[in-house]
Length: 408
Image (cartoon, rainbow, N blue to C red; front, side):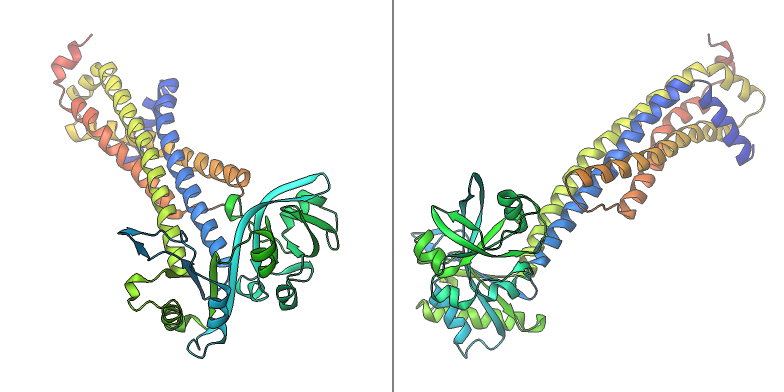
């Protein structure tokens, strides 16, 4: 029996009971579709996180307070202590010991209620200096960013993100010159930033920027900083810049043992690597869950094929009595099983891609379909066809022609 005849015979056998064939294929469609959709969403989430981190700026180092301090045998968590001051940031900027740092951006970040008239929004309020604009790649849609004069004079001016402008004034309203209230104090809006996107706590459009000293002394009553962000002169001197800043701060904080440092320095690559690891683990977990449905679909196909063998026992006996060899019978049933899974794989690929596209639009993620995940899913579907089709095929091939012909 040649390949064309074998394939035609398999298709004919499957079309005799269309409902059973459809139900058997459905399990594979759901399994393959789930794998592709979930892997695609996981990769889209990873790409979105990477984009958000990279949009914060280039060649960045972030100094976070309290990460490596120990008190009474208890190690402090990153950002859990108050150890960094504005004077530390000025020392880094002005010291000749740190030649590989080009910009220094001390920051104080807290959430606060911002109101304008009857409208209000709970947003991230960040105390900044002018360097923040360049360090974090901020572009102005209208107006101007905070100046050093605003910082030194503790001016009550604010630069707002487009989401804040939309929440307080509507999409088409010009916010420049209007007044907002932060923690009960009035601020004049001097600028609106260009949208950078994001969601939840990572929404860079839902931020209000005010002068750092105004935030410290008049709004939050804080003497310390949330962090100090630094921009190295180039990617090649990141390690050197990290060491220079570390030794300077150890000296200023009068700490002789680096292991007892009351701060930690993270590079942008460290943050990106940690985020990628988390999203990668999440994607693998989702893929594992989806793979279970593939297993269930494979078992369903095996059950269908076993039922088919039982129903076609007399046919098998007749074929063998007319000289059909064992390998022909095996090939016949394997072909039917592989056709089921391959068809299910194609339909599942289309279903998964469509679901991924729709969901990515709903939750504002980039649409990503990995060719490797599609290839893997199709390979797995073919493997399932062979694996779960082998046992029924073997069972059919091992039937005795005489016993099969007597089967009622």
